[in-house]
Length: 237
Image (tube, helix red, strand yellow):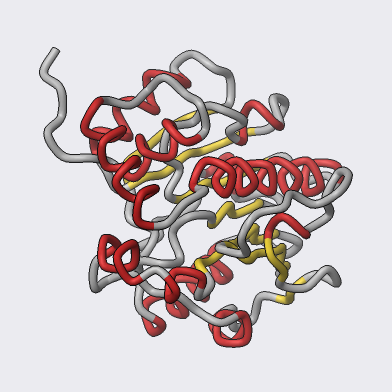
């Protein structure tokens, strides 16, 4: 087996979540970022916990189809693990991540993993078109610019049936205080204030909980004490 020479964000997150599907190059990159910033594992575990709470809340409301963009490695509390009776389609733009993810979910009823670009959302699977869908839009908002993100979110709104839900997060401005870490993210990395992100949601209607730091969204107990690096919430069609 030839080990990759370039780190993958998805595999770095797997490392921070305590998974096993990463390589030395990913660990090295993760540790370098930690040296420039700090508590990445705590932050990403809190973000994954938010994902789990959001998925459980949506599933309890009767939605049983989940379309997951920027899916990464589907383990460590991924959507199909949180909602095992749901239909789940994972989508990622990285072919290596897609291959790894497809191998993980192979043979699971109602679960698939395909290659796709969130900024060019294709038609929903036929099995998703006859009822509300939850679009899981986590970990991807930082990469499109404002115009592209607004267009993408509007295209997703247009594509899904009435009653569908958008589970979203975005990078707030935490990294401004850490210029070395921010430089590692590259020029295509977009941080946003909550008001700015809210304007990009267009026709999606944010739930009563609003747009809040993810640790503070419907916590099961005391909220995780982590930096407010990610904000998010749910919005509906």
